[in-house]
Image 1: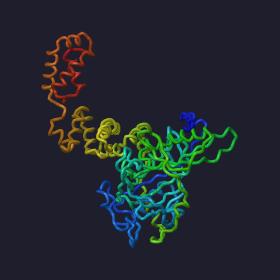
Image 2: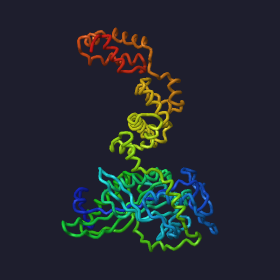
Image 3: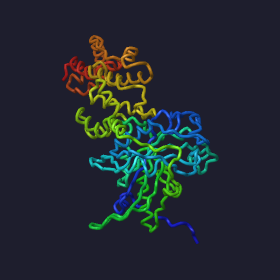
Image 4: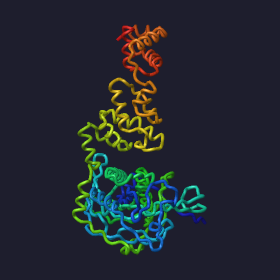
Length: 505
C-alpha cells in the first residue's frame, strides 16, 4: 500500500485571487546611515573584513554598557514624520530575548510596546490608483550579525558543513517599519517597498541598498474567502511570514507564491501553519523555516541599561523643519516643470536614474535630453557592469555637457557615446576626452565635400539611381562618407550635401 502524501492541486494565481482575498502586511527593516553603531562607537561601513568593526558593547561582553546614538534617533524621527506618524514624547527600549548565533548578547535591544513613532500612513500609486497603507509603528533597534553557511549548494544551513559568523553588522542602527494589514495585492506590496525606499533615500537616512541588506522586507500573508454581495468580511486567516526579501521583484514574487500556496491548502481542506518561511530566488518558491513566535516568546522587558527617551516638542519640531521634499511631491513637480509624463517618471524610477536626470537638468541639459542619455544609454551600461547608475564614473555635469554639445551640433549621438566611453575609462572630463581623442564633429566644409565627392565617384551606379529619383538609395553613400570621416560628421548634413551634389530631392 502506498504511503505517499496526496497531491494537492495548485490553482492558478487568477483562480486563487478570484475566490480568496489576500491580506498582506509588511515589516521593513532599514539600516540607518550613521557613522557609528546604535549603542557604541564602532564603524558601520559595509564590506569590511569580518569581525573588525566590533567592541565589548556590540559583542555583549560582561560589564559593557550601551549609549544611545543621537543621530539614529534623529534619523528615525525623520522617517516617522515623513510617514505622517505621531512622535512619542517619551519612549524606551526593551530587551527582546532569543538565542541565535548571530545575536552575540542572546537578546536584541529593540522597542516593543512603546515605539518612537506610531499611527502613520504612506500613499502608493499602482496603475493610476492610490492605495493608502497604514503604518502601525516605526521603532528603533539594533541589527544582528550575519551567519555564513559554508559547504552546501544553497548557502543555507541545510547541507552546510560548517557556519561562520561576522559580527560587524551586529549593533548597526535599524528602524523597523510595520504596516497595518492594508495591502491586498503583490503589486501594491512591491509599490509600497519601492516608495518607502525612495522616501528613505530622499531623507538621506540610509542608502537603502537591498542587495547589501540595508533594506530588507518580511511579508506577512494570509487569505480569507471573498464575501458574497451583502455579506460581512470574513475574519483574517492564519498568516505566514516570509523573511528577508532583498529585492522589489522578490517581494512581489514571494507574496504571489504564498497566495497560490495557501489557496491550494485551503482548497484541500488543510490548514495554513503560522510560521516563518524563506524565499528561494532561483525557484520562486518559499519553504518552511520555523514556527512563528508570538511576542510572549521573546519575554520582552524594559532595557535596564538605558534610560527612556524623552523628546521635547522643540526637538521634534526642529527635525520636522528639515524634512525635505518627499518623492511623491517631487514627482508632481517634475511633471509640471519638465513636461515628463507619469510613465516617464516611472521608467526613470525603475532604472534608478531619476535623481541623476534631475541633477543633469539642473546642470544645464534639457529635460528630454537628460532623460534620454541616462535612461537609454547609461542605465544600460550600469546594468552591464552590475552596478547602480549613480556608481558609474560619470556624473550629471559631464552628461549635461554632452547634451549641450549634441544640441549645438558639435557632437553626434555616436560621438557622444564615445565621449562617455572615455569618461568611464577615467580619461578626464567630457571636454578633456573630446580634445584628447579628437571627437568633435568635423566642421571643415572642404574636407566634408571632398569625402562626398569621393563617395559619389566610388559608387557611380548608386549615384545614378539617386539622380534618377530614388532618393532612399542614398544610404550607402551616407555610410561611405561617415566611414571616411570616422563618424565625425552629422549624418543628416551628409545626406543633405549628397542630395545637393546629385541634384536630387
